[in-house]
Image 1 (cartoon, rainbow, N blue to C red):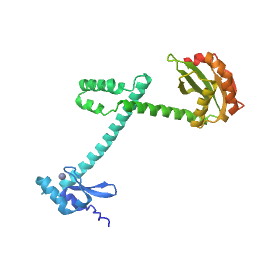
Image 2 (cartoon, rainbow, N blue to C red):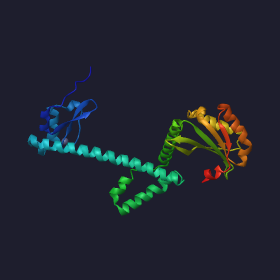
Image 3 (cartoon, helix red, strand yellow):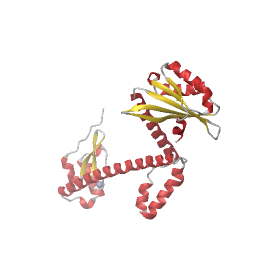
Image 4 (cartoon, rainbow, N blue to C red):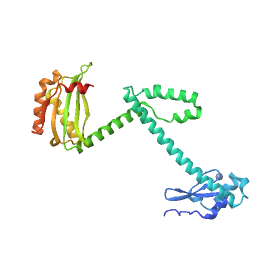
Length: 279
Ligand SMILES: [Zn+2]
């Protein structure tokens, strides 16, 4: 059998108690010390006992005194809720903004906890005081947080881009394949698409592989990307390869495979575009 739920009675204010909603039950809260008790304590004898033991000097105060106390308690609750929420959302936002700066400056994820946060705290304590520094200490800049935030933001950018490409009546892709100093092959894929009345160009993805990629390898990377992100080959109107020597031999093979997916794709080879991509 479920325990009987006790209800708050307006008269309980004479013991200094106000009702507080906890889930689907009401619990008594002391308007003097803000302590809350179980629903079972919602009865005159228990409330009276708290007042006489915890606040003996207030036992003979009139009802109006506790009513005044309960009004200020309500105000405190609102203020605490409001400022706490505002502060915590700013703390989270600061964490994202700083993660963005770390990414834009191509710094290590660990720089947040090793350098940025200690610097912030030292400066804040010296310039603004200890209280302000304590507020800043809540900003999470750990290695894992920075990495998580950057991953989340890049995924979000990718999602936004994919939505735009899917909304575009057609789109084209451009591949740029280079080898970096570590002898890693980097395949950069760009997309051109309609957004509103303009043609936009954005980097779609960057894929690195250890060995020199064949046209089949490159096609597979692109094909997997299309599949993973539900991009339609039917909407693809053009595929452009760059002027890198490594791409020259691959070009025909790659374009041929794309055409197998959609015969109407226009395959082009663009040397001039490389400069635009590099800038
Ligand atoms: Zn109390």
